Image (cartoon, rainbow, N blue to C red):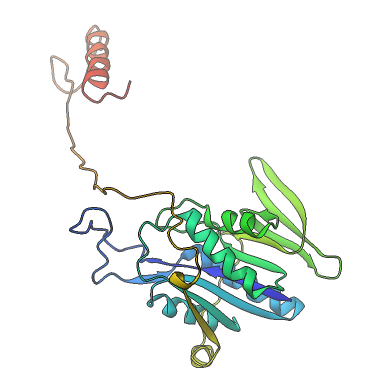
Amino acid sequence: MKILVIVSQTQDTEAKIKVSAAGNSIDTEGMKWIMNPYDEFAVEEAIQTKEKHGGEVVVVSMGPARVVETIRQALAMGADSALHILDEGSPDMDSFAMGKIIAGEIRKLGGFDIVFTGMKIIDEESGQVGVQIAEELGIPHVSLVSKVIEINPSANKAVCQKEIDGGHMVVEVPLPCLITCPDAMNEPRYASLPGIMKAKKKPLTEVKVSDTNLDGLARVKTVEIKVPQIERKLRIIKGQDGPMVKGAEVEKSAEELIKLLREEAKVI
């Protein structure tokens, strides 16, 4: 089997987000970067699939040069080779453009049986890239899969379980297909020291976004980013004898509370 796994790099979950001087992007100076947490589950599922059925796992990732560190992490976990789509700052790269570009490069790879990716990227959390890739490739996708019940290459099918309100749903799709992975799917393995050493020698191919003839497809343009200013106000409604509201004061105090919620807090 040829198994693809799409990974991305995001800011550390504990990073303090600051707006750049230009006001339309995030200041990345000195920021720590990690593999998108949901993509770790996708990598683990891809490796487990290879262990059960044989074949190879190919990592596909798009981003600047620093993304290679995340790609090497996936290779150290057990993937076999990687494709890095180098993007050194295409303006306003949205989910639509990213999906189209990644799908275009996957199409060139050809011959794949299944694609795994995280259910969303934690920076914008749109959850659209994986779905967009599947649509561009013309293959079925199953989102938020909690368990892969069966992958049967000879029968050309995958059977997956996904959680729904009050239970779960079993979905069967033909191969090739794309599966998005939530955090309850498995337990990602740690990269071993031998795995880290081997990852340095595994094949990593690079293509540039500018060479794909698909640059400039973004439909979303970021004009300005603002950090919300939180203003906290405290108003205490007291009774005649102190903080406790009693007896006939209750109705009057309730009216005052409703007025404050309507006119000042504007929540009703």
